[in-house]
View 1 (spheres, helix red, strand yellow):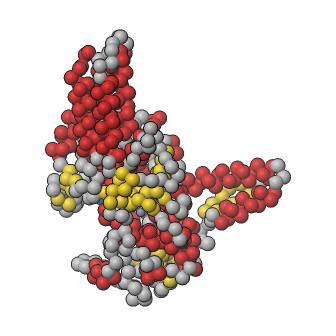
View 2 (cartoon, rainbow, N blue to C red):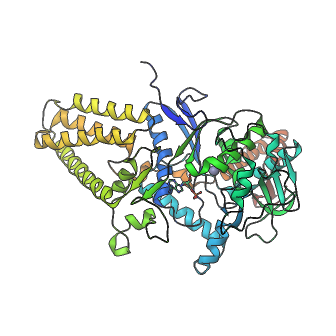
View 3 (cartoon, rainbow, N blue to C red):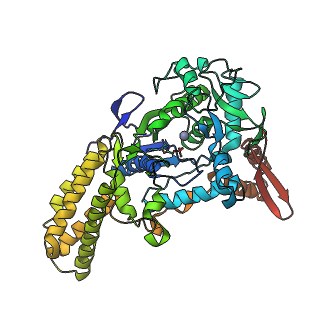
Length: 505
Ligand code: AMP
Ligand code: ZN
């Protein structure tokens, strides 16, 4: 059978390209995750759903998937749309506003990342294989900035370290945004506090490291106390877990510039190789025809929609919310409305009725011919082909709804082989679209919230202990040196071995 072609629009080429993993049938991709200064809203989740559907579609055609999605917990500033981002750190601002509820900014980050993961699971999103945090990859970010400086691509000023855009002629290849003047003007827009560093050589140059000994989250670096720019975390964490060249990179449309443009500049300057082959961007979600905004009262978090009415929420089924988010193709503008939510809640009820009938028929275990299998197979194929065609979710949902209506129509006649076919179809549609039933505990990867660096360190320490026990001291020393390079300090004592992350390089 020929390998099915999975086609996605690629912002880099401006056309719908086949997804071609470097290692055939193994998709390695990165999606920008949230900044954990508050609960994620339904717009954020529209972007996360796109990443989830990319993974599900690739898996549906038998590919392996390695999916990395980060958590931004430092360095994302309020005025992030211009080259030299400025304003306040979103994390620090949240703590200033919500200070009463949290002991410190770390506590706030932990609380909102836990909340994110809860909502992520409620919406049946596939767990990333790795969910790295920016604050836990500080050594790697500092090393990347230092390496750029050594290559003469980054330079230091009194305020920080900047990427010299002039040194990367391909800058602008993703966004087409090459006009230095436009960026400089952007920085001076209404109500902004961003002041361009006068020592910058070019208005397009963006910060890799901000010197700030007063910042709430700061690290020691070769340039003194400070914190990393927002863009460097994603290039560093993507290459750390997926390698220097990745198959695909996703995010919301607002990230095309400057975030993704800067990620490309950083990663490609460091490695000399093309970074991501495919760039996928989700159009913004609007609510009832307007930009979502707290001031107009049309701003919704996932949890306030799905919490029960007793808990002050709206009691919407998470599956209905997910189905609503799927009802628009990711690349088209999407208008989220309560009418759509109601319609999808009806579809979900219908699905639940069908599941009950199928379960009852399977339990009754009566004999019967398969009079639905062929038609259901055709409908699954239609849904899969739609997903392979640039994630055409409206068409995939239409095929699903047709299958559900078919099963509802046959009702009590379902038995034996037809009930088996119905069950298999529901399971396959669920794997593809995640709208049939909530994930069970067993389906949620245990290591979803694990700290990948800690796991790596523990594995190396185990190997070192074994090497020492068997007298292979050279290997033991080698591992210690490797850990040292990774920024890990190893402490041996009579009680055993412990380790910690070193604070400075
Ligand atoms: P942030 O927490 O601001 O870093 O955003 C996390 C992700 O959500 C990014 O990929 C954003 O591009 C995306 N995003 C933010 N707002 C929306 C929206 N209204 N519609 C779709 N995606 C969004
Ligand atoms: Zn990112």
